Length: 211
Image (cartoon, rainbow, N blue to C red):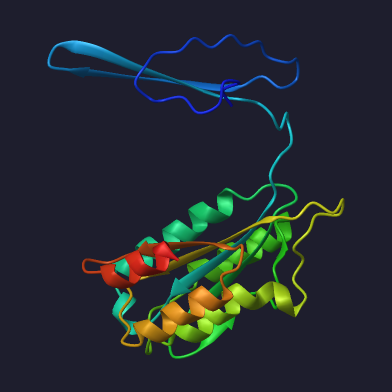
């Protein structure tokens, strides 16, 4: 924060700064050559949180309706397996599938232990595409799971970052009702919509992401 208050973005400035031991920043340098000239972008992210790891509650929602048959369901399964690999100690997760009906692997999100992850991987590999597309109940289940007793805090009382990843081709006709549901129930959950297939419903993806 500039000590002199608001500063117009029409000038250079000099930053004098020294790191605190144990709170070193993350650094990245990007390089690109354009029209014979080299350009560099250096980025420093202050290490204000030290070594603290942000724990997550990850809810993976996958569309298994008939329109997802073929390459779409295969790609969606691979995406879910990759997502499970990102979970770390202290994280919780669940997997929800929907077609004509909605089904959760676990009643509530569970710890990302070896046994739970192995069970989830078997579940994901067995997913098949069939039936209709009843998306509302899946959204409702994903956004409301913590109200049914799901753990939303770590043992030391730190709240988890709650993420819902929604993978679908978006073949639905009740978009307005879905948007109302998201707006009313999203709260502080972060919703990521992932369009899949050759012609996903981009209107649904964009509007859901906007909320």
